[in-house]
Length: 195
Image (cartoon, rainbow, N blue to C red):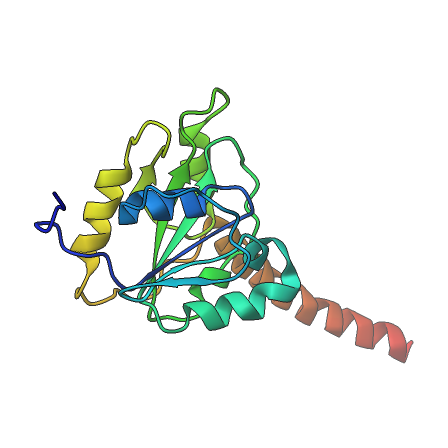
């Protein structure tokens, strides 16, 4: 018997590095029991639900393909494996379009070297706001909660762009300092030339 009581998932894209578990999570969210195969290109499911290959994240030359794939969806779901504290994207790339919400998902929490707290901090530091959903397709942990959250977002207006991360704030602060010191250096430089 199929579960027709649950609304269908619509209007989101799953992104993340190679082998972070995107396709397995997509299949779990959609209730697909088939074999998990490596995604070679963007896969479009019913309801404008999109699975992307990890190469869109891992290769700078594919950032254009990533940006063109996410242009028409409301929600970007970014996966970060629970055993990796390397953020594969430039800060803010997922916030290029101001009309998108970004949801952070920590995958593979069943792994023995998983560090959910560290990965959650990493997501926050890279402008992906909480809540962060800790999931495992092996145990099923967190998948239903993520699915329910994505359903709850459907049809809701999108808030303004996410606040800048700590590193963006530091960058802006250092730019102000450079401008101030640059003006002072400019004056010193001119007096040195006139001597």
